[in-house]
Image 1 (cartoon, helix red, strand yellow):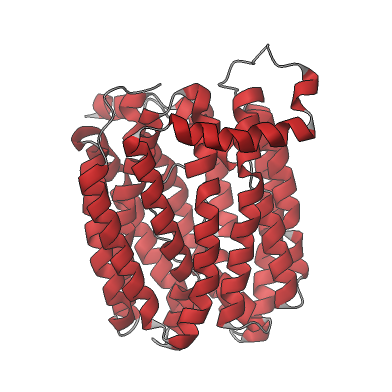
Image 2 (cartoon, rainbow, N blue to C red):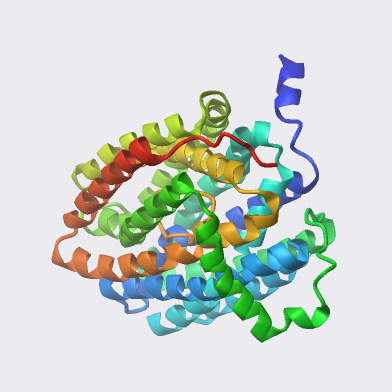
Length: 432
Protein backbone atom coordinates (compact mmCIF):
# COMPACT_ATOMS: atom_id res chain seq x y z
CA UNK A 1 0.00 0.00 0.00
CA UNK A 2 2.77 2.43 1.01
CA UNK A 3 4.83 1.48 -2.04
CA UNK A 4 1.80 1.98 -4.31
CA UNK A 5 1.14 5.41 -2.77
CA UNK A 6 4.78 6.46 -3.24
CA UNK A 7 4.60 5.31 -6.86
CA UNK A 8 1.38 7.26 -7.43
CA UNK A 9 3.00 10.42 -6.02
CA UNK A 10 6.43 10.02 -7.64
CA UNK A 11 5.87 13.12 -9.79
CA UNK A 12 5.87 15.37 -6.67
CA UNK A 13 9.40 16.69 -7.16
CA UNK A 14 11.30 19.32 -9.15
CA UNK A 15 9.15 21.86 -10.92
CA UNK A 16 5.88 20.31 -9.75
CA UNK A 17 6.89 20.58 -6.09
CA UNK A 18 8.01 24.21 -6.49
CA UNK A 19 4.84 25.12 -8.38
CA UNK A 20 2.69 23.58 -5.63
CA UNK A 21 4.60 25.43 -2.90
CA UNK A 22 4.09 28.72 -4.73
CA UNK A 23 0.40 28.00 -5.23
CA UNK A 24 0.03 27.24 -1.52
CA UNK A 25 1.54 30.62 -0.66
CA UNK A 26 -0.64 32.45 -3.19
CA UNK A 27 -3.74 30.58 -2.10
CA UNK A 28 -3.24 31.52 1.52
CA UNK A 29 -2.84 35.23 0.80
CA UNK A 30 -5.35 35.89 -1.99
CA UNK A 31 -8.10 33.56 -0.79
CA UNK A 32 -8.38 35.51 2.45
CA UNK A 33 -9.61 38.49 0.45
CA UNK A 34 -11.04 37.49 -2.94
CA UNK A 35 -14.24 35.82 -1.61
CA UNK A 36 -15.14 39.26 -0.21
CA UNK A 37 -14.01 41.30 -3.23
CA UNK A 38 -17.55 42.15 -4.33
CA UNK A 39 -18.48 43.22 -0.79
CA UNK A 40 -15.34 45.42 -0.70
CA UNK A 41 -16.53 47.21 -3.84
CA UNK A 42 -19.97 47.74 -2.30
CA UNK A 43 -18.42 49.04 0.94
CA UNK A 44 -16.43 51.61 -1.09
CA UNK A 45 -19.63 53.00 -2.60
CA UNK A 46 -20.14 50.73 -5.59
CA UNK A 47 -23.38 49.08 -6.69
CA UNK A 48 -24.01 45.64 -8.25
CA UNK A 49 -23.61 47.33 -11.63
CA UNK A 50 -20.14 48.56 -10.63
CA UNK A 51 -19.26 45.08 -9.32
CA UNK A 52 -19.97 43.72 -12.80
CA UNK A 53 -18.14 46.61 -14.47
CA UNK A 54 -14.96 46.13 -12.41
CA UNK A 55 -14.86 42.41 -13.10
CA UNK A 56 -15.45 43.11 -16.79
CA UNK A 57 -12.57 45.62 -16.90
CA UNK A 58 -10.24 43.04 -15.41
CA UNK A 59 -11.18 40.49 -18.03
CA UNK A 60 -10.76 42.98 -20.88
CA UNK A 61 -7.29 43.83 -19.57
CA UNK A 62 -6.29 40.19 -19.35
CA UNK A 63 -7.16 39.66 -22.99
CA UNK A 64 -4.57 42.05 -24.41
CA UNK A 65 -1.28 40.42 -23.43
CA UNK A 66 -2.17 36.72 -23.06
CA UNK A 67 -1.10 35.89 -26.65
CA UNK A 68 2.17 37.74 -26.04
CA UNK A 69 2.85 35.65 -22.95
CA UNK A 70 2.15 32.42 -24.83
CA UNK A 71 4.27 33.49 -27.80
CA UNK A 72 7.28 34.40 -25.64
CA UNK A 73 6.89 31.17 -23.65
CA UNK A 74 7.19 29.06 -26.81
CA UNK A 75 9.98 31.15 -28.35
CA UNK A 76 12.20 32.04 -25.38
CA UNK A 77 11.13 29.80 -22.53
CA UNK A 78 8.88 29.81 -19.50
CA UNK A 79 10.75 30.48 -16.26
CA UNK A 80 12.14 34.02 -16.62
CA UNK A 81 8.85 35.26 -18.03
CA UNK A 82 6.98 33.73 -15.09
CA UNK A 83 9.35 35.04 -12.42
CA UNK A 84 9.76 38.66 -13.51
CA UNK A 85 6.08 39.04 -14.41
CA UNK A 86 5.09 37.77 -10.96
CA UNK A 87 7.00 40.69 -9.44
CA UNK A 88 5.01 43.14 -11.57
CA UNK A 89 1.71 41.45 -10.77
CA UNK A 90 2.48 41.62 -7.05
CA UNK A 91 3.15 45.37 -7.22
CA UNK A 92 -0.30 45.96 -8.71
CA UNK A 93 -1.87 44.78 -5.43
CA UNK A 94 -0.82 48.05 -3.79
CA UNK A 95 -3.68 49.82 -5.58
CA UNK A 96 -6.16 47.65 -3.69
CA UNK A 97 -4.41 48.52 -0.42
CA UNK A 98 -4.63 52.26 -1.15
CA UNK A 99 -8.16 52.25 -2.61
CA UNK A 100 -10.46 55.00 -1.28
CA UNK A 101 -13.34 54.40 -3.72
CA UNK A 102 -14.53 51.79 -6.19
CA UNK A 103 -12.87 53.65 -9.07
CA UNK A 104 -9.43 52.95 -7.56
CA UNK A 105 -10.34 49.29 -7.26
CA UNK A 106 -11.35 49.33 -10.93
CA UNK A 107 -7.92 50.68 -11.93
CA UNK A 108 -6.20 48.09 -9.75
CA UNK A 109 -8.25 45.26 -11.22
CA UNK A 110 -7.47 46.37 -14.78
CA UNK A 111 -3.74 46.62 -14.08
CA UNK A 112 -3.44 43.39 -12.09
CA UNK A 113 -5.24 41.33 -14.72
CA UNK A 114 -3.16 42.95 -17.49
CA UNK A 115 -0.03 41.71 -15.73
CA UNK A 116 -1.23 38.10 -15.53
CA UNK A 117 -0.07 37.50 -19.09
CA UNK A 118 2.50 35.01 -17.79
CA UNK A 119 -0.24 32.46 -17.03
CA UNK A 120 0.06 30.60 -20.39
CA UNK A 121 3.76 30.10 -19.65
CA UNK A 122 2.95 28.81 -16.16
CA UNK A 123 0.35 26.41 -17.53
CA UNK A 124 2.74 25.17 -20.21
CA UNK A 125 5.43 24.57 -17.57
CA UNK A 126 2.97 22.51 -15.52
CA UNK A 127 2.01 20.35 -18.50
CA UNK A 128 5.65 19.95 -19.58
CA UNK A 129 6.62 18.75 -16.10
CA UNK A 130 3.90 16.06 -15.78
CA UNK A 131 4.25 12.71 -17.62
CA UNK A 132 1.06 11.91 -19.61
CA UNK A 133 0.22 8.79 -17.59
CA UNK A 134 -0.12 10.79 -14.33
CA UNK A 135 -1.61 14.04 -15.62
CA UNK A 136 -5.07 13.40 -14.19
CA UNK A 137 -3.83 12.92 -10.62
CA UNK A 138 -1.05 15.48 -11.17
CA UNK A 139 -3.38 18.30 -12.16
CA UNK A 140 -5.78 17.22 -9.40
CA UNK A 141 -3.09 17.44 -6.70
CA UNK A 142 -1.82 20.76 -8.02
CA UNK A 143 -5.35 22.06 -7.42
CA UNK A 144 -6.03 20.15 -4.19
CA UNK A 145 -2.90 20.84 -2.13
CA UNK A 146 -3.13 24.63 -2.48
CA UNK A 147 -6.86 24.15 -1.96
CA UNK A 148 -6.12 22.87 1.54
CA UNK A 149 -4.98 26.39 2.38
CA UNK A 150 -7.60 28.03 0.20
CA UNK A 151 -10.46 26.55 2.19
CA UNK A 152 -9.17 27.92 5.48
CA UNK A 153 -8.32 31.37 4.13
CA UNK A 154 -11.89 32.67 3.51
CA UNK A 155 -12.84 31.59 7.01
CA UNK A 156 -9.85 33.57 8.30
CA UNK A 157 -10.99 36.51 6.17
CA UNK A 158 -14.44 36.36 7.73
CA UNK A 159 -12.87 36.34 11.21
CA UNK A 160 -10.66 39.33 10.38
CA UNK A 161 -13.62 41.32 9.04
CA UNK A 162 -15.63 40.42 12.16
CA UNK A 163 -12.69 41.47 14.37
CA UNK A 164 -12.69 44.90 12.70
CA UNK A 165 -16.40 45.34 13.50
CA UNK A 166 -18.08 43.64 10.53
CA UNK A 167 -19.59 46.83 9.07
CA UNK A 168 -18.54 48.61 5.89
CA UNK A 169 -15.73 50.57 7.58
CA UNK A 170 -14.47 47.47 9.37
CA UNK A 171 -14.54 45.53 6.11
CA UNK A 172 -12.54 48.23 4.32
CA UNK A 173 -9.82 48.21 6.98
CA UNK A 174 -9.69 44.42 7.13
CA UNK A 175 -9.53 43.98 3.36
CA UNK A 176 -6.75 46.57 3.05
CA UNK A 177 -4.69 44.59 5.55
CA UNK A 178 -5.32 41.38 3.63
CA UNK A 179 -4.26 42.96 0.32
CA UNK A 180 -1.02 44.11 1.96
CA UNK A 181 -0.34 40.52 3.01
CA UNK A 182 -1.03 39.38 -0.57
CA UNK A 183 1.46 41.95 -1.93
CA UNK A 184 4.27 40.76 0.35
CA UNK A 185 3.49 37.10 -0.41
CA UNK A 186 3.64 37.81 -4.14
CA UNK A 187 7.18 39.15 -3.87
CA UNK A 188 8.22 35.96 -2.08
CA UNK A 189 6.55 33.74 -4.70
CA UNK A 190 8.28 35.60 -7.54
CA UNK A 191 11.67 35.09 -5.90
CA UNK A 192 11.09 31.36 -5.38
CA UNK A 193 9.94 30.89 -8.97
CA UNK A 194 13.00 32.61 -10.44
CA UNK A 195 15.48 30.78 -8.24
CA UNK A 196 14.17 27.20 -8.23
CA UNK A 197 12.09 26.50 -11.36
CA UNK A 198 13.89 24.69 -14.19
CA UNK A 199 13.30 25.52 -17.84
CA UNK A 200 11.52 22.80 -19.86
CA UNK A 201 11.84 24.24 -23.36
CA UNK A 202 15.02 24.05 -25.38
CA UNK A 203 16.16 27.43 -26.58
CA UNK A 204 15.28 28.22 -30.18
CA UNK A 205 18.74 29.06 -31.50
CA UNK A 206 17.34 30.23 -34.82
CA UNK A 207 15.89 33.32 -33.12
CA UNK A 208 18.07 36.39 -33.42
CA UNK A 209 17.94 38.87 -30.55
CA UNK A 210 16.41 41.55 -32.78
CA UNK A 211 13.58 39.21 -33.72
CA UNK A 212 12.10 39.56 -30.23
CA UNK A 213 11.66 43.33 -30.36
CA UNK A 214 8.39 44.72 -29.08
CA UNK A 215 6.71 45.23 -32.46
CA UNK A 216 7.93 41.90 -33.79
CA UNK A 217 6.73 40.12 -30.64
CA UNK A 218 3.28 41.71 -30.81
CA UNK A 219 2.94 40.94 -34.51
CA UNK A 220 4.06 37.34 -34.07
CA UNK A 221 1.85 36.81 -31.03
CA UNK A 222 -1.39 37.99 -32.58
CA UNK A 223 -0.65 36.42 -35.94
CA UNK A 224 -0.10 33.17 -34.06
CA UNK A 225 -3.70 33.19 -32.81
CA UNK A 226 -5.07 32.53 -36.30
CA UNK A 227 -2.37 29.98 -37.05
CA UNK A 228 -3.07 28.13 -33.80
CA UNK A 229 -6.82 27.99 -34.44
CA UNK A 230 -6.14 26.52 -37.90
CA UNK A 231 -3.87 23.92 -36.29
CA UNK A 232 -6.61 22.70 -33.91
CA UNK A 233 -8.59 19.60 -34.79
CA UNK A 234 -12.39 19.38 -34.50
CA UNK A 235 -12.60 18.13 -30.88
CA UNK A 236 -10.13 20.78 -29.67
CA UNK A 237 -12.16 23.49 -31.40
CA UNK A 238 -15.26 22.12 -29.68
CA UNK A 239 -13.50 22.36 -26.32
CA UNK A 240 -12.76 25.98 -27.19
CA UNK A 241 -16.43 26.61 -28.03
CA UNK A 242 -17.54 25.04 -24.74
CA UNK A 243 -15.04 27.20 -22.87
CA UNK A 244 -16.33 30.32 -24.62
CA UNK A 245 -19.93 29.48 -23.69
CA UNK A 246 -19.07 28.65 -20.09
CA UNK A 247 -16.81 31.72 -19.70
CA UNK A 248 -19.67 34.03 -20.60
CA UNK A 249 -21.97 32.61 -17.93
CA UNK A 250 -19.43 31.73 -15.21
CA UNK A 251 -18.17 35.33 -15.30
CA UNK A 252 -21.74 36.65 -15.35
CA UNK A 253 -22.60 34.91 -12.07
CA UNK A 254 -19.21 34.63 -10.26
CA UNK A 255 -19.19 38.00 -8.40
CA UNK A 256 -22.78 37.60 -7.23
CA UNK A 257 -22.76 34.33 -5.29
CA UNK A 258 -21.68 36.20 -2.15
CA UNK A 259 -23.85 39.26 -2.91
CA UNK A 260 -26.98 37.09 -3.20
CA UNK A 261 -26.00 35.13 -0.10
CA UNK A 262 -25.82 38.36 1.92
CA UNK A 263 -28.70 40.34 0.44
CA UNK A 264 -31.26 37.59 -0.27
CA UNK A 265 -30.32 34.64 1.94
CA UNK A 266 -29.18 36.55 5.03
CA UNK A 267 -25.64 35.15 5.34
CA UNK A 268 -22.97 37.19 7.16
CA UNK A 269 -19.31 37.44 6.02
CA UNK A 270 -18.55 34.87 8.73
CA UNK A 271 -21.20 32.52 7.27
CA UNK A 272 -19.77 32.95 3.78
CA UNK A 273 -16.27 32.21 5.03
CA UNK A 274 -17.64 29.04 6.65
CA UNK A 275 -19.34 28.09 3.36
CA UNK A 276 -16.03 28.48 1.53
CA UNK A 277 -14.33 26.38 4.21
CA UNK A 278 -16.81 23.50 3.99
CA UNK A 279 -17.07 23.45 0.20
CA UNK A 280 -13.30 23.74 -0.08
CA UNK A 281 -12.79 20.76 2.21
CA UNK A 282 -15.05 18.75 -0.07
CA UNK A 283 -12.93 19.83 -3.03
CA UNK A 284 -9.73 18.77 -1.28
CA UNK A 285 -11.01 15.39 -0.14
CA UNK A 286 -12.34 14.52 -3.59
CA UNK A 287 -9.58 16.00 -5.78
CA UNK A 288 -7.10 13.09 -5.76
CA UNK A 289 -9.77 10.36 -6.09
CA UNK A 290 -11.30 12.25 -8.99
CA UNK A 291 -7.85 12.66 -10.56
CA UNK A 292 -7.29 8.90 -10.32
CA UNK A 293 -10.64 8.34 -12.00
CA UNK A 294 -9.62 10.69 -14.81
CA UNK A 295 -6.53 8.54 -15.45
CA UNK A 296 -8.52 5.28 -15.24
CA UNK A 297 -11.90 6.13 -16.81
CA UNK A 298 -10.59 8.79 -19.24
CA UNK A 299 -11.39 12.50 -19.11
CA UNK A 300 -14.61 12.69 -21.12
CA UNK A 301 -16.68 10.60 -18.69
CA UNK A 302 -15.61 12.79 -15.77
CA UNK A 303 -16.43 15.97 -17.68
CA UNK A 304 -19.93 14.71 -18.48
CA UNK A 305 -20.54 13.76 -14.84
CA UNK A 306 -19.37 17.14 -13.56
CA UNK A 307 -21.48 19.11 -16.04
CA UNK A 308 -24.59 17.09 -15.19
CA UNK A 309 -24.21 17.63 -11.44
CA UNK A 310 -23.41 21.34 -11.76
CA UNK A 311 -26.34 22.14 -14.05
CA UNK A 312 -28.77 20.88 -11.38
CA UNK A 313 -27.09 22.48 -8.35
CA UNK A 314 -26.75 25.89 -10.00
CA UNK A 315 -30.48 25.97 -10.66
CA UNK A 316 -31.20 25.24 -6.96
CA UNK A 317 -28.92 27.92 -5.46
CA UNK A 318 -31.43 30.83 -5.32
CA UNK A 319 -33.79 28.54 -3.40
CA UNK A 320 -31.20 27.23 -0.91
CA UNK A 321 -32.94 29.12 1.91
CA UNK A 322 -30.02 29.85 4.25
CA UNK A 323 -26.57 28.77 5.45
CA UNK A 324 -27.22 24.99 5.45
CA UNK A 325 -28.61 25.05 1.92
CA UNK A 326 -25.75 27.24 0.68
CA UNK A 327 -23.17 24.97 2.34
CA UNK A 328 -24.71 21.92 0.67
CA UNK A 329 -24.98 23.35 -2.84
CA UNK A 330 -21.49 24.88 -2.88
CA UNK A 331 -20.03 21.62 -1.60
CA UNK A 332 -21.62 19.62 -4.42
CA UNK A 333 -20.41 22.20 -6.93
CA UNK A 334 -16.88 21.80 -5.51
CA UNK A 335 -17.19 18.09 -6.19
CA UNK A 336 -18.16 18.81 -9.80
CA UNK A 337 -15.11 21.09 -10.13
CA UNK A 338 -12.95 18.22 -8.83
CA UNK A 339 -14.31 16.12 -11.68
CA UNK A 340 -14.09 18.68 -14.47
CA UNK A 341 -10.86 20.62 -13.92
CA UNK A 342 -8.32 17.75 -13.95
CA UNK A 343 -10.29 16.08 -16.74
CA UNK A 344 -10.23 19.14 -18.99
CA UNK A 345 -6.58 19.86 -18.10
CA UNK A 346 -5.56 16.31 -18.98
CA UNK A 347 -7.57 16.21 -22.19
CA UNK A 348 -6.14 19.52 -23.43
CA UNK A 349 -2.53 18.74 -22.43
CA UNK A 350 -2.72 15.33 -24.11
CA UNK A 351 -3.79 16.91 -27.39
CA UNK A 352 -1.11 19.64 -27.61
CA UNK A 353 2.61 19.03 -28.30
CA UNK A 354 5.12 20.76 -26.02
CA UNK A 355 6.33 23.16 -28.71
CA UNK A 356 2.83 24.65 -29.07
CA UNK A 357 1.59 24.65 -25.47
CA UNK A 358 2.39 28.26 -24.63
CA UNK A 359 0.49 29.59 -27.64
CA UNK A 360 -2.43 27.18 -27.36
CA UNK A 361 -2.85 27.70 -23.61
CA UNK A 362 -2.78 31.47 -24.20
CA UNK A 363 -5.84 31.03 -26.43
CA UNK A 364 -7.95 28.44 -24.60
CA UNK A 365 -6.45 28.04 -21.13
CA UNK A 366 -6.20 24.60 -19.54
CA UNK A 367 -9.07 24.26 -17.06
CA UNK A 368 -12.03 23.95 -19.40
CA UNK A 369 -15.14 24.63 -17.31
CA UNK A 370 -14.62 25.75 -13.71
CA UNK A 371 -17.36 27.19 -11.51
CA UNK A 372 -16.09 30.15 -9.52
CA UNK A 373 -17.73 31.55 -6.39
CA UNK A 374 -15.86 34.86 -6.53
CA UNK A 375 -13.91 36.31 -9.44
CA UNK A 376 -13.67 34.62 -12.83
CA UNK A 377 -10.04 33.59 -13.35
CA UNK A 378 -9.34 34.29 -16.98
CA UNK A 379 -8.15 31.33 -18.98
CA UNK A 380 -7.23 32.24 -22.55
CA UNK A 381 -7.35 35.10 -25.04
CA UNK A 382 -10.52 33.93 -26.77
CA UNK A 383 -12.26 33.46 -23.40
CA UNK A 384 -11.74 37.00 -22.16
CA UNK A 385 -14.20 38.81 -24.50
CA UNK A 386 -17.22 36.61 -23.62
CA UNK A 387 -16.22 36.64 -19.95
CA UNK A 388 -15.96 40.46 -19.96
CA UNK A 389 -19.37 40.71 -21.61
CA UNK A 390 -20.80 38.28 -19.07
CA UNK A 391 -19.36 40.17 -16.08
CA UNK A 392 -20.76 43.46 -17.39
CA UNK A 393 -24.13 41.92 -18.18
CA UNK A 394 -24.34 40.16 -14.80
CA UNK A 395 -24.68 43.37 -12.81
CA UNK A 396 -27.62 44.55 -14.91
CA UNK A 397 -29.36 41.17 -14.77
CA UNK A 398 -28.89 41.02 -11.01
CA UNK A 399 -30.60 44.38 -10.55
CA UNK A 400 -33.43 43.25 -12.86
CA UNK A 401 -34.00 39.93 -11.07
CA UNK A 402 -31.19 38.08 -9.24
CA UNK A 403 -32.62 34.60 -9.79
CA UNK A 404 -32.35 35.01 -13.58
CA UNK A 405 -28.55 34.68 -13.28
CA UNK A 406 -28.61 31.11 -11.98
CA UNK A 407 -31.41 30.00 -14.30
CA UNK A 408 -29.41 31.16 -17.34
CA UNK A 409 -26.18 29.67 -15.96
CA UNK A 410 -27.82 26.28 -15.41
CA UNK A 411 -29.07 26.23 -19.00
CA UNK A 412 -25.55 27.05 -20.24
CA UNK A 413 -24.08 24.09 -18.33
CA UNK A 414 -26.75 21.82 -19.82
CA UNK A 415 -25.77 23.05 -23.29
CA UNK A 416 -22.09 22.36 -22.54
CA UNK A 417 -23.06 18.85 -21.43
CA UNK A 418 -24.79 18.21 -24.76
CA UNK A 419 -21.89 19.58 -26.84
CA UNK A 420 -19.37 17.49 -24.89
CA UNK A 421 -21.36 14.29 -25.33
CA UNK A 422 -21.83 14.75 -29.08
CA UNK A 423 -18.59 16.32 -30.30
CA UNK A 424 -15.63 15.74 -27.98
CA UNK A 425 -13.45 12.69 -28.63
CA UNK A 426 -10.47 11.32 -26.71
CA UNK A 427 -7.13 11.84 -28.56
CA UNK A 428 -5.58 8.81 -30.28
CA UNK A 429 -2.07 10.17 -29.67
CA UNK A 430 -0.94 11.49 -26.29
CA UNK A 431 1.74 14.20 -26.28
CA UNK A 432 4.50 14.52 -23.71
